[in-house]
Image (cartoon, rainbow, N blue to C red; front, side, top):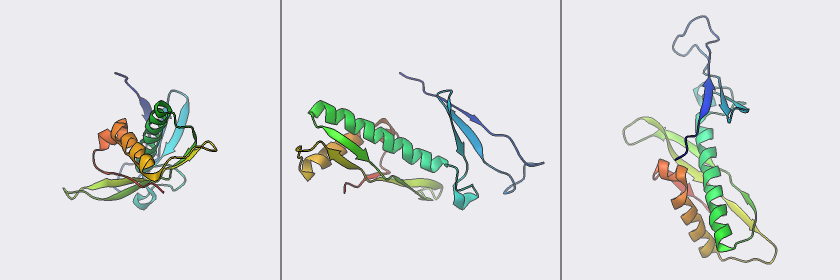
Length: 149
């Protein structure tokens, strides 16, 4: 199987490392060429202009779901013209009382080539299949909600 990696780099900006008094801002490099500034979520003291791990998790799930949907649609002969999603990660306490991403909601909107029609039930079934076959969704288990508009 594939081994997929990132490189993460953080260095202390403050004189000392003290609770609540240091920056968590860091850089994540993908594929040796693309860098993203990452920080804690704004509610946890991070800079709002940086992404955060919870957004990155929602992004990974949304991307995986879309790629799975497109692969299944191609096999079914569905001419997908565009795909848009608004993914939301929800933070809260899990069953153990620990802070966690308790749920990720996906809101995919699919457009097809002019003249192609598919009923809502068939689209919902294909979205469900995409969810079941998505590697990231399988990793996250039951904390994903796919809301078809």
